[in-house]
Image (cartoon, rainbow, N blue to C red):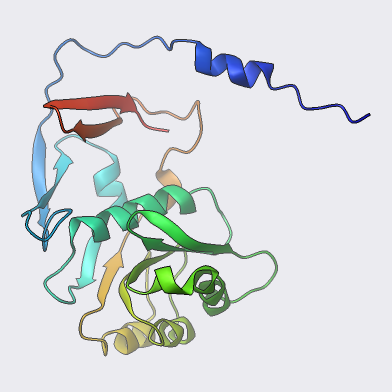
Length: 215
């Protein structure tokens, strides 16, 4: 008889209220960082703000190298940041193909796969959803990978860096948005990581916001 896994402690965590020390009044000072092509929908103007005294926004330093057609939409921006929350767990080369905040494909290096091979695997996981996606790498994009990216329609490519010839190749595609970011290894990952002053804030459609710690 096979003995099952004891998940009692895991289940108990969902029944236990967490102590919290959030202030009765939370005052946040925000600084506008970027304007957007539009918000979550084309009829909604949008902008990106960062916390005045926040740590992660300057560390990750997400910025456009090539604007494509009128820059990023809110969904493009959220695709990049959601991908970083996936890629931060992988020290090896990895790529996430994002479509409307959900990875339609993901691949990580298991042996000696090249970056273009990883991209093909991630893209072809769901090739239909990969059409018009945002592709996020955790390694420098090289010329061969750039060439592979040019074979299908993607809205944006994000990476910590691009080789000069890869940038030149990708700049041939008029509407493609190219995005740099930094500091992936400094994002908090696990319970116990220092998240002092790092809030995850979600707006609710009822005049309220949900505030919780990161991770």
